[in-house]
Length: 557
Image 1 (cartoon, rainbow, N blue to C red):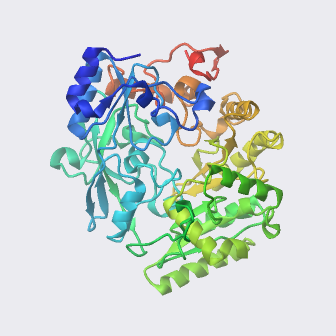
Image 2: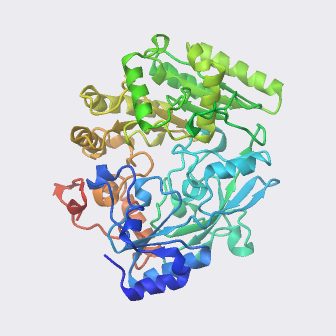
Image 3: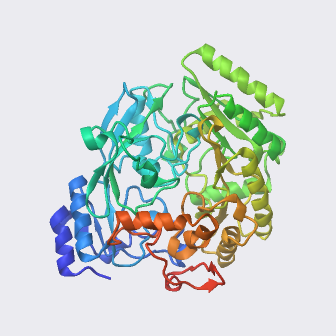
């Protein structure tokens, strides 16, 4: 649906002629991303009615007030990596592309924090913070992810959480344009203008800001955030080298950076892997940690080459590591001195030996360890590209290692027939946790993700992916006691998956409170709720009390 001339001109008056567009050819570059075929049966999601590129907080606030005046839905995004960041409830919605708001406003070395705008990527902040001996935790989707999106608006889980924490626990203050167009600063920012602490006198709003996995653009726009930083033990500059004629993706570190050491032990089974992992995390010696995502292999030039390499590995896996790749871990330690590194390495090797771990040469040679270091610290985000699409599945709740193990094994039973039928990519790993991310030395538990990699343009593979996810997410299934699912990182599309509507009644009607928060912050319902919660549930097809999935644009309402 096109905006009226009056509506378009009102928005144009806010950002200027050059920074608004509604041409279909431009709009279609904003609504195609992985996951669309799964949810909408098409390459594209709903086409936005217009896209704006505001330059600052004041322009964002003014544009939001125009949306309230004319009843226009809006959603803001930074990198736009995930499908939910661009999906809209209907075609009377517009997108705020925040790429012009790309400044690192401050890096406060003494107080170990940074103040950034929305389009600052995690890697950009890492590069600048390293110059001052500081570091911000990475996120699983890749180095281009936005700092604010990860910390304030979305999932924000990472393999560095064992050291840096995550899930918004590093947010020290924000500047927040509410869905009414009002500007709110949390905590100290409201009284002093200095975003030093998100908690001031009275109630804290950090829980409302993001909860566990964020509102995904459903309750306004975060235009500035102050984020806690952590020590960086490496050099202030580094170079990823490649041979003449090689593509950029072949660039590699020569070795693990000074100040760090990397180890990739392999275990015989999931029990030993998780037991060793738990002990390693509680020993408080780790800087980063991950299970099953090794990053030790060289990257290939493109998707076709990557797929060919994976197929070759599936046919002829390395003999000495058959059955153990999925039970291997990457453990990174760091220290200010050789003595500190020596002590931590001694602890790590002792725990590994206790649980029968082996250091295979092909996973622990210098180049393999350098690649693993780069991947787990900066996250290349390449390891999920082989089939074109993937979906994190039910293993997303926070919990103890034992709970997550039980969940992974149960999910493996459901997933196995699909893998045996060839519907999903598998390297023969079977029922085991693909990615396990400890939080703060396991003091607040861990987070686990398993993924289904499927081909969205193979009808059998696409149907299998939907059937698999539906089985996991049906509250009538045996998974219901593991907690409210969030498709990995709050990746549900509410008009399709109906997570809150199906699961709220089972969990103290939490959804009623979330809807009240939505109404309070957004009385005119102009904040797009595709990946948050509707103010009221529309009518959908049901099977008893269960709301059926609504795949495809025409089936949603």
